[in-house]
Length: 129
Image (cartoon, rainbow, N blue to C red; front, side, top):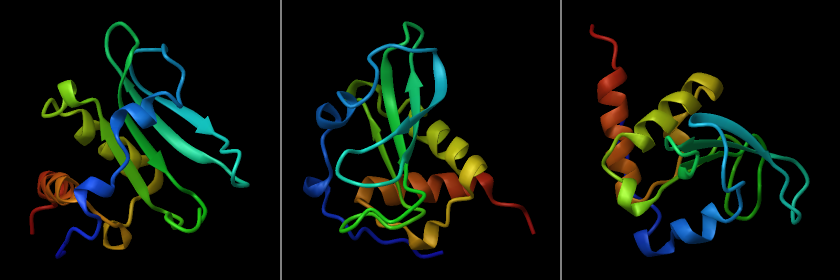
């Protein structure tokens, strides 16, 4: 699969703008949170990765329905707190999302970091011929 970045990195929402939308504390590890945005009908499936103290360190949003104008059904977005990047948080969130919702990576839009993450994930999960 040939993945290309279609979203400029500077266009992606910041960590700080996203983390405030979720409960500040919760169970450690990956948990599910159902978001009900006021501006849309429907839900957003959220996976939250929390550290040992229960603080959110990673977020994955999965859109089960279209959220115009930016998100189409099946899209996922991932954010990891900058100090927690390069620790496998995004990979764990992506693996759990793929297990739950069978992500179609050919229909995603990516930043350059997203391309690297998904390429690494697909290489890690590839079934040998």
